[in-house]
Length: 311
Image (cartoon, rainbow, N blue to C red; front, side, top):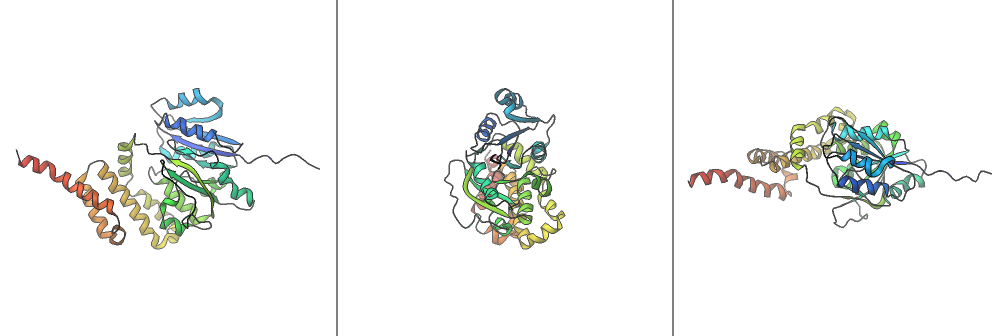
């Protein structure tokens, strides 16, 4: 009789980073502090200029598998490199300014341990900053959840899911040409192809760090409509999205308009907002934030002219 215990499944937490120290240290500490016993932490430093790589080496040594990109590769390629470098059964993601709660991995492994035949994706709830998060409610579903995700994009985020590494390699991986909404594109693909199971727990905390916000908004505008273009290239996914593709287009247009506003390109923002009012009148009806920004943009666009007139 063999009394040897079955070894625990191994899980890698992949953390891409660029100039996020000391938030990166908090993220790594939360990954190393998981209650699940068999963990690997992979940090992909995307050509940081703040000494992040040297600090990771000094602070963590062999406890962290560090990959250093000699030049900037952006988030999608960094995450893909981390998944390929992992030597574990499962993988999950963590943004370098966010945190995992101590039982995050253990909770998301439960669906796999309770059903050995399950070969999908397990996910948990994210808590934004210190706001209260509850794992209860109809929006957290199990099964083929694409329709639910299209109806409520906030039900899933990049830190929420855990899956077998081989499935990630086969079905997942991030589109390298996307520098924004790359996680949404991946999650749309996955929710259309594989079953999801909700683990029933709050698993991570999303922190607000605006250190590189201007660069982020500029990158969003450079990407333009590449997100929806990538979805159109996947004919089967586009077919499954059906009328829901309109919600995805609306989401991308909102992101682009928001970046115009944040970069104070007010005239262009007003043009984009008016176009959305014409294209998505039903979806825009309840969007008070866009209308509020339109009022600000009008005022800011007129301010230099009115000031000049008083001279």
